[in-house]
Image (cartoon, rainbow, N blue to C red; front, side, top):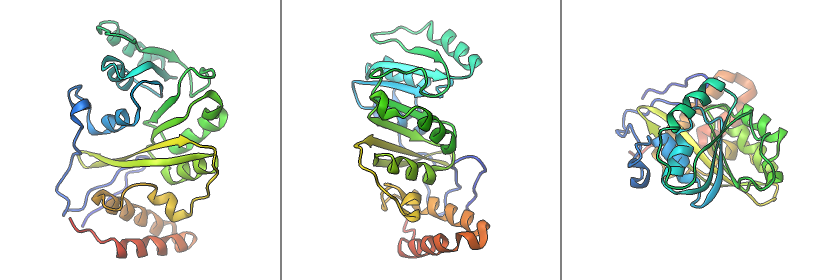
Length: 249
């Protein structure tokens, strides 16, 4: 059984006994040619939301949400001028049935004012950077009540940070493109402070019936083994979890 952890990304090689290499895309988003990774983000945005995609890059996600008539407002924010320029050139030729994508040059949530949006998406960069942006401009103070997150690294620490700040993890999904896995987390603001254990921060709200969770946890075990004695306690918990949740696929 082979596993590998790629530095800087939440990514793992699936066990040989798991044959699926690409997650299914809901028909609602498949018709827009979204892959599993972006489709999982789109599925986390509620219908009628006013959304901002932080680190939007080429603005594919807000474009699809706007063209599908799914959102009332679609903002794409990025600090890379070149990416936004390319996005503007592409979107200029798009027929807009209703709401049009707005593209803003900026870093994080700093350009937003209270009640502009109620849902923020962050994906494509690390959990540490996400914490930095959320700490600088707390989303709940801007009227944002829903976060859709897909960090490239540092997910356990991000879960713990937000749980301590009054955000509840309501659902999480692992999706695969090729043999790379991504975890999408949906969180809502309820103001209740929570303290996650180290094991809870690793597992989150991913269903124990999800076969890819076994692969994710095995990747974490390999990472903990490399940390040596300082990770001994958590490593023992992960080993115990794996023993009680064997791969059955």
